[in-house]
Structure formats: structure tokens, C-alpha cells
Image (cartoon, rainbow, N blue to C red; front, side, top):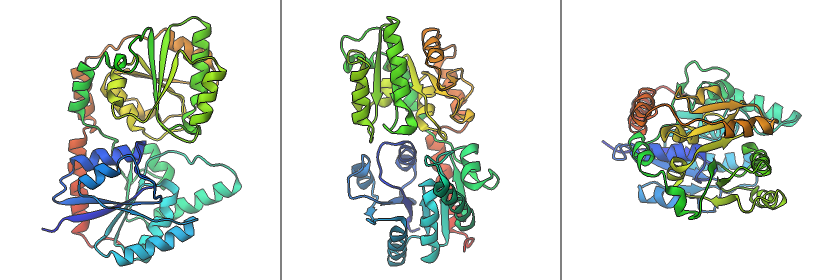
Length: 372
């Protein structure tokens, strides 16, 4: 039996939510049966590029000045590399152009995967594009996948005939990390004291780091002893650094950049902040709950992220005092690590099982003639 090569369309394989989810599946899927290759739209090296190549994947950068040019170049690529009959697109509204390219190239199986519940842009032009892109995603995709019900309803206007594939993780690994890494922060800051707060995510507007820094400023004004680690990289890095100085938080807030030990840092934290303006089903919230970490998150995040472990608390944006009060009044988890593992496994958040399900999904569609 020949190995099926699936072409995944991403922007860049950095340590972001959708990309991390994809890599979790890639590591655990049977690569003798299904191999992943990647279309990216940059020549810059992604965080996962070396690992992808080591796992036998290929990376094909396509450089274009706009979406139309990108679509034509992708069409030409797909006509040239005829071994790809499954294209799996991960770029939300922009999937429309990639699916159209695949259709024009005669690709039989075109998968649109929704990883978010909202488009970050607004305005008349953005709203028109959104409607157009959602229409094309529905009409051009032969299979649809979403990380949750709200993400499905956003991109496809329905959750019917959409496979809800959870953002799964290696539950056994996270269970072990939770039990053995309670002192992990001291490796980063040896004189650590007080409340340990963490925020994990790309440094962009959606993640709302300025609100987190206002919380930190209030904590300092109240004399609360705390350390706040910000993990991630992105376009707002310089602005966040300036805010840390402006709020006089240099002794409390530390930017760690990209880290490979995020699960260990979460296991050693007391609480995670996620005051996001919107989210789909971020994998970091699966990770945080898997290690037993309490998360304070905005009420704009999809409610389905709460996995009934009493480890997620939704709070409104705009009122810093409410968040500060929740931090000060937080309680230790009342659920055991073994109960967490059992619950998450039963809810299909184990990546080994999901990788097998994805393998069978690809095998089934490759053996069918459904598609147009």
C-alpha cells in the first residue's frame, strides 16, 4: 500500500494554536500510511520546520503579493504535483482561495478546517469578504472539520455534517508533567515568590495583553506579591515591553518568548490568564486543564472550552477589579489528577486516539470517489 500524502495549507508552522494542534496529530499519526506535507506563505523558517522535515514531511513555500496571485500559484503547484489528492486547509476565511485553487487543479478531496469563531477584521469590506469566503468554504469543501461547535457554525453556518475534531494532546505526558513539575518556575527565576501567573499565546491584539498588564498593575498597587510570565512572540512584543516599563512592572512581569517547556511552566503556575477578545477552542486551554491549572478567561471565549473540571472561570472584559478579586480569592483545585485524565480521555481529548481517527478519516476519503 502506498503512503498517502496529505497537503496541509498553513501560513507558517510556528508555535501557535492551530499549528500546535496539527503537530500533535502529526507526531502520533501512522506515517507509514499517511504523511503530511505543508504549503506555507513565507520563506522564514517556522518553529516546527525542522521537526516536520525530520518526520519525513515536505515544506513548499509559495510567495505572492496578494491572495489572487497566491491562488494562481497554488493552482499551478497542485497541477504540477499530481500526487496530492487530499488538500487540508487551515486558514479560516482564506481557505476559500485555497479550496478554489484545489478545485481548479482537479483535487478531488478538499478539506476546510475551522480553528476560530470570529474574524479579527471589521468594516464594510471585511464583512463583505467574510460572507463571500464563508459561501466559498461551504460550496467548495468536500469535507469540513472544526475544533468545536462554535467554530463550525462560524465558518460553515452549521455544525451539521462537520466533524468536530477536538484540539487533543498527549494526556499521559501531561499527567506526568503535572505530577513532577510543580517547581519548574524556579529554573527560570530562582528567587521566585508569591502568586505565579502565566499567559500563553501569540503577542497580538486578540490576546489582549494590555488588559493583563492592567491587572498586574492593580495587583502591585494593592501590594500583592506575584510573578507574571508572558509566553509567546508576535507583532506587539515591543509595545508590551513599553507597557511593562510604563506600568513599572519590571520586577514582576517577564517576557519569555517562545518556549518548548510551556506545559511544565503551566504545571508550576497558580493561575493562567486569557482575556482574549475572541477564541475558538484554544489548545492551551486543554493543556492548562490537563495539568490542573486554574484559568481566568474572558466571557468572549467559546463556553465549550470549559471541560467540567472546575478549572475555568469566565469573567467580563473591561472590569479589572473583577479579575483582581478572582485572582486573590482563587481556590486550589478540588479534583484529582487521575480524575482529570479520565474525564479528558472520555471526552476525546487524547491525541493518540484522535490521530487514529484522523488516519481512518483520510483512508476512507482516499478510497472513495466522493468529491467534485
